[in-house]
Amino acid sequence: MGRIVLVTGGCRSGKSAYAESLVEAAPGRRVYVATCPVIDEELRQRVELHRQRRAAKQWATIEEQVDLEKAIRAASGYGVVLVDCLTLWINNLMYQAEREGGTFDETQAAERSGRVVAAALDHPGTVIFVTNEVGLGVVPENAGARQFRDLVGRANQTFAAGATIVALVSCGIPLFLKGSIDEFNQGNN
Image 1: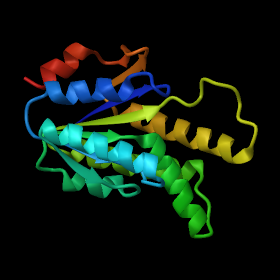
Image 2 (image 1 turned 135 degrees about the horizontal axis):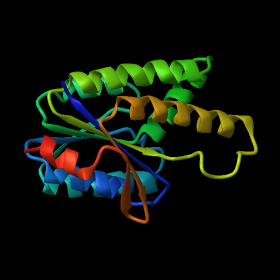
Image 3 (image 1 turned 90 degrees about the horizontal axis):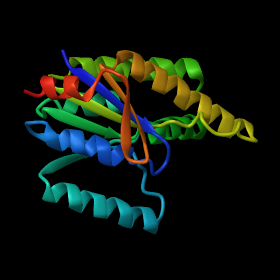
């Protein structure tokens, strides 16, 4: 049975760097599952820089914007999988539904999240998910932004329920909401 770690925090809180440090401290092969769509030149350059940095540290990369269940199952040969990030994944699912003339609601978000959690629990190692905590600010002014906030919140709750460890990162410092760093380290010995 796999182990799930959820790392959350605000934008630029240090959550991705913290998640990467957990992966690099763990033994075995590691893979990064990237959910970010490349939509402009600045983003393309940013993604390329991240790819190069990870490649220098012996990371493999899987780019998957929508089907995280498939990506995790494809990563079965890796001891540690880092999925960064669930927030963009929800954005991508909303965009896909809109392009297909449909909608993506909280029930669908919970169901899709549950399937990804099940795939992670089937994984023979550790799967670390990174997500933004988007519910700490003001209520968004428009319906689309409120829906996005609600969908990310629903997904985050589903992933946290399935996780062994949940860390909230603020100013680069993790606060453990569930489990502990000792539990993480013990699971990697």
